[in-house]
Amino acid sequence: MILGLILGLILGLVLHISYPTAYSFYITMALLAAMDSVLGAAKAYMEEKYSTLIFLSGFLVNALFAALLVYLGDRLGVPLYYAVILVFGGRLFQNLSEIRHIFIARWRARKNHDKQQ
Image (tube, rainbow, N blue to C red; front, side, top):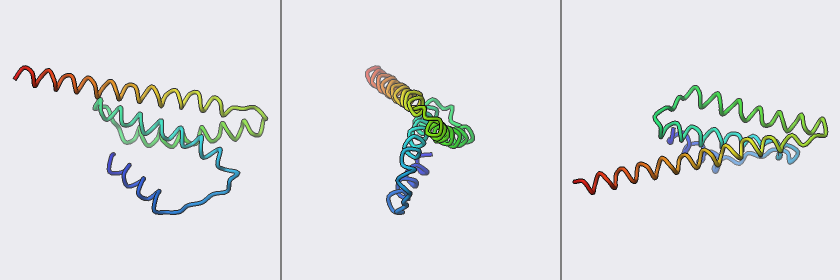
C-alpha cells in the first residue's frame, strides 16, 4: 500500500497532466473524497483490517460520487458541494484523529514495555 502511494506521488509529480479549469472544482471535490479513502485505508492497515478490494472500490466510488454530487448541484443550482466538503472533510479529520490515537497507544505500550524490562 505504501509503495503504491509513493509511486502515485512520484507519477503525479513527474507527469504534467493538465485539465480544463472548468473541471477544477469537480476534481478538487473528488480529491477530497480520495484523500478520505487513503486515510481510511491507512487506519485500516494500522488496525490490521486492510482490504485492497474495499480500498479500491471506496476510492473510486467516493471520488466519482463526490464529482457527481458537485455536477448535479451545478446543474440544479444547489450548492451540493457543501455536502461533499462536510462529509468527506469530517471523515478526513476523524480518520486522522483515529490514526493519531493508534500511534499514541502504540507509543505508550512500547514505553511501558521498555520500563518493565
